[in-house]
Amino acid sequence: MLENGKLYIGTSRNPDDSLNKPEYLELKFGNRHGIVTGATGTGKTVTLQVLAESFSNAGVPVFCADIKGDLSGIAAMGEAKDWVTKRAELIGFNDFAFQEFPVIFWDLYGEKGHRVRSTIAEMGPLLLSRLMDASEAQEGVLNIAFKIADQGGLPLMDLKDLQALLNYMGEHATELSTQFGLISKSSVGSLQRGLLVLEQQGAEHFFGEPALKISDIMRTTNDGRGAISVLAADKLMMNPRLYATFLLWLLSELFEELPEVGDPDKPKLVFFFDEAHLLFNDAPKVLIERVEQVVRLIRSKGVGVYFVTQNPLDVPETILAQLGNRVQHALRAYTPREQKAVKTAADTFRPNPAFDCATAITTLGTGEALVSTLQDKGIPSMVERTLVRPPSGRVGPLSDSERQAVINVSPVAGLYDKDLDRESAYEILTERARKAAEAEAAKRAAEEQASQGAGDDSAAGRWTLPGFGNDGEDEAPRSTSRNGTTRRSSGYQRETVIEAAMKSAARSVATSVGRALVRGILGSLRR
Image (cartoon, rainbow, N blue to C red; front, side):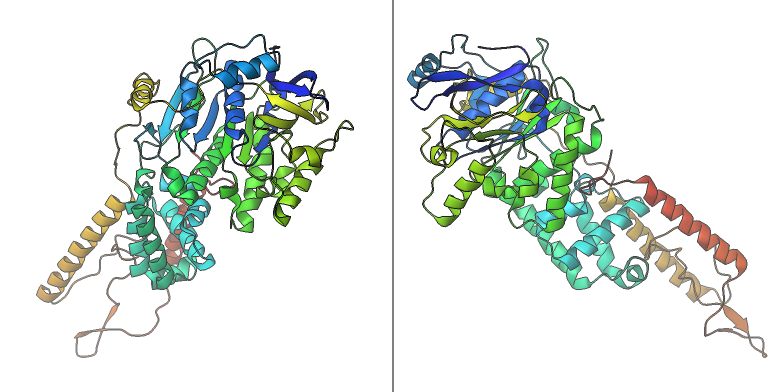
């Protein structure tokens, strides 16, 4: 029943429960995205494991999240449980065999897998605003912060870098507002409190270096199988917004870094987004629009995105319309919203005259699903009532010792285990502030000792930030009175042509620096 170029999902049945035919997902349409939905306990996790195993055997790397901890068993040889052998026999799966699969475990907290990190700069202002649940005004200040960092050569790596930059912005809000727009001290204070909340929730484990390399979740083994990256998300789910933001960041990184490949014979990576409703709950319109854009365009880069959720209504219609491969497990229809979900799910399938789709959705058994995949020239197949094949790997969690054994022999062992804290915005701003304070003290001492002195204009033509000296805040011009004494002149003094030209050059330099740093659709910094 296993065929080259096709992934065997299960065997469909006729209305009288007799076997109909094998149901496949064609590998060349694996990057056309998909969705797996169904109520709790209907078999979504097993279906996810079956798809991940099938893609791996076809040489396609897989990334998925382990919400409950039981997906980790995919790294171990399957066991002859009663329901597994009966299901294989019932659907006539004569090629069934147990396997263990190449797995790389990841964990934002570094407890159940290799550490996963991103920098603040790579996260970008849009996703960070979403993570902090920032207001529109606060999001504007955060965008200004990233603009200042990009133009001023201030690398934002971890939380303390952004905290230092926000402190600087609060102290120089008046000067910076004239250049970048209104910077409210109250918004800055709210963002600082938001960063404190993130730190208490464990986000400091995620922000920093070394940042995750996309190539490390796109590995294949020597025997040609795709590595399955499993993110330990049981603890991460205590902070659902961080979970959703991290997966969206990873998706945006894939979009920004991978080249265009058109329609390959098989995907370069398959990305499973479990608990997908967390991505869209209370998300601002601009974020949903950009997610839709990424999902639509990432297909041409060879990445297939599969949303796993309980209810098809959890996914916006604009994104749902782009999901060509569909597996629908049973839904309950006790409330008006659940009844609407059943109707929505039924309407998304190509009808089968042999049965009523809406009725079938509410009567499916555990491990049974309505399946429709893209066939031939990308046309959806007629929906079929299908018994999903059993997984070849273990169904259930690994023990702690088994997990650690897999981590120890991982191809990325040792690459992400130690923190790297190189010079970034925090160190740069701290050093500049120290030098500015020393310069100010020296200046005051010189003014007290010297009766006369000439101003130092050595800083002309250099782009600077307010508050760090040499920024045009020299003492006011002096003029000589009739009795020979000097006095400060008051009033506005027009700048010379040379001064104007030098200021224009400084602005051009600052603009060119800013242009060198390009951010993508979701605001993340392109590497």
